[in-house]
Every structure is written in structure tokens, then in C-alpha cells.
Image (cartoon, rainbow, N blue to C red):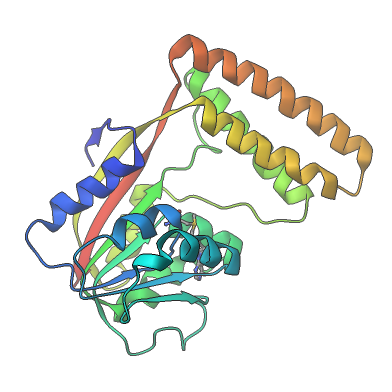
Length: 258
Ligand SMILES: C[S@@+](CC[C@H](N)C(=O)[O-])C[C@H]1O[C@@H](n2cnc3c(N)ncnc32)[C@H](O)[C@@H]1O
């Protein structure tokens, strides 16, 4: 899979638009919706638009941002892909799974190997999978890689100790293999290099810091707070020196029913 370097989320959506070319979007399903994918996809020239989220909170956020532009034929559904009744018998020309694979761990743990087969009856023409190569495990050959990995590990450790289930990202190769064994033909795959900025560092560490109040052990919470702030200082220093933290990739994989 070739690697390129447009750093912004919108570059991934532009890439999908290029892959789609002149083909109509038709009936469109945003299978793991959120503000970013909903803002992009609900603005496309679709015949009808449907979005699914596992979380009422995400649903309310999406409704707040795109609700005003939805047409009579458009729908926003709070449901879970583990429910066989969800969109049963309903097909869509274009289906988007935008950072859905990684989030499945938080909504239906261990369901990832079944996800694409579950979506398969809904995919009439094209499925686009957007994801993030894991950075909390594996090699960290540079300073930026180590800092990004350390942030991910500390964030996930805090989430676990606060009683939550962190997201679990899967590599592009896993997605390609899972698609091929779930009734799809993969037509395209491309990686996009990431450069994490200060807003990402602060966002991840603030998310962790907010969870400390839920720790059963206040001493552990205080120690974790020190770790979070020390890591924040180290990461922001490196961000300033190197103009961000260049590490890892997002990816877009396109597939069609086999
Ligand atoms: C990372 S979030 C949102 C990403 C989104 N595309 C965006 O633009 O921000 C992933 C979404 O997938 C949904 N999701 C995860 N697992 C799910 C499941 N098993 N069933 C339904 N929705 C699920 C979450 O509720 C959330 O809406």
C-alpha cells in the first residue's frame, strides 16, 4: 500500500471523492457517524443519507451540526451493529466506515472480525473504510514515535482504570484481510502520514485528566496526574521543536461486493 503525506482529515475525504469519480453516491450510509464524517457526507449529492452511531451523545452532536440540512428522506439512527434488526434488508450504494473499526471495541468489544460481514448486506456498490494504524503497540523508532506511543498508552491506561474501554485500532493490512474474507473485493488502499499537533497532545491528555476523578485510589490518581503533566511538557516541547509529531498513518481502503 503506497504511503503519502497529506496530514489533514479532509485529505482522506478528498481521496474518497477522487476514488468515487463520476459514479453517483446514490443512497449513502455513514456506518459509524460523528461530526466530521456527517458534515462531509451529508453535503454530498446523495439520493438519501443515513447515519448510525452507537452513542446517543454522538447522535446529539451530529444532530446539532447537520440536523438543519437533513432532508425528509435522511435519517440519524442510534443503534448497534450487533443488533441483527439494525437496517435489516436495507441496501446503500455507498457505505462509509470512518474510524468505526477502532471504535467498535468501545461499543461491542470483540465484534471487529464480524463487522464487515455484518455490513455486507447493506453495501450495494462501494464500501470505504477509513482507519488509523495502531500506535500504542509496536516499534517506536523516533522521538516523535515514542512520545505518540507514550501518550496513547497513558491515555488508555487511565481510561481502563476509570472503568472505560479504550478504542482499539487495527492496521490497514488487517482491514484488507478482513474485507477479503467477508465477501468483498478490495479495489484500492492508501496510507496518509500523520503529523500530530499541540491540539492533539492536549486533547488526548485532557481526556485522560478528566477521568482521574473516577479512580477508586486517590493516590494513584495523583501519581497519574503527575505523569500526565510531565508527558504533556515533554510532548509539547518536542512539538514546538519539530513542528509537530510526525508518526504513523491513517488509511483509506475501498472495497466492492465480491
Ligand atoms: C470514532 S467515532 C466517530 C467517527 C466519525 N466518523 C467522525 O467523523 O467523527 C466512531 C463511531 O462509531 C460508532 N460505533 C462504534 N461501534 C459501533 C457499533 N458496534 N454499532 C454502532 N455504532 C458503533 C460510535 O458510536 C461512533 O459514532
